[in-house]
Each structure stands twice: as structure tokens, then as C-alpha cells.
Amino acid sequence: MRKLDPHTLLSTLWLFILLNIIFRDIHQFALKSHLEMLLTGYYDGMLITDELMLLGGFLALVPISMVLLSLLLQPRWLRPATAVAVVFTAGPAILSPPTDLDDVLHFSVAILALVAISWIAWTTLGKPAARPAS
Image: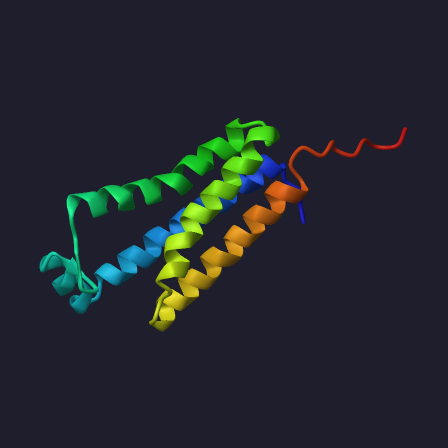
């Protein structure tokens, strides 16, 4: 397999997580019960408020920002930013784990990608590239 620069790999994994989230949400919107629940203004018994929508927007902005920040930040700054972003991305999903099988699949894939992101950020960032022997 081709070896990628860690920054490129991290950015690609964040994009992979975003696409996974988007596809799962689109998949949910195809369910009649899901749409009916959203039209009532409640989701799983919780009132959807402007503040809750703002929080959701912030949580979505974290992985979106990490696609770009993974390419721009120096390892010294990228490691802690990645750690915070992984917590903000995984936290809500872990606090309310999925119950149906398709959501379990998307949840599992996202968690595995977040583990890979954490591993790459802490093991490969900032290490000098091996120089070929002369």
C-alpha cells in the first residue's frame, strides 16, 4: 500500500467520517417515522430548540474544520487539536449509542476511523521521515 503523508491521511479520514455522518443522516430522512418525529418539533422526546440546533451546528463544524486543520497545522498544534476534535466528535455518539442496525454500522465505522485518527496523530506526527541510505 502507498504511504501517505500523515497530514493528508488525517484530513482524508476526517472527510471519511463526514461522509459517513452525512450518509447516515440522509438514510434516516428516508424513514417516514423519522420525518414525522422531526415535523412535531421533538426528536426522541426532546424539544428541538434554537440552542440545540446551534450545538448541533457546532458539533458538525468540528470534523469539518479538522479536514482543513489537518493539512494546515504543525504537529505541535495538530496533536492537541485532534484529541479535542475526537472527543467532541465521539462524545455525543457514545452518550446516545444507536439502537437500529444501520446506525450501529455507521457508529462502528466512525469510531474505528476516530481510533485510527488518534493513533496516527499521536504516533506519526512530528517524527522525522526516514532518509534513504546513501
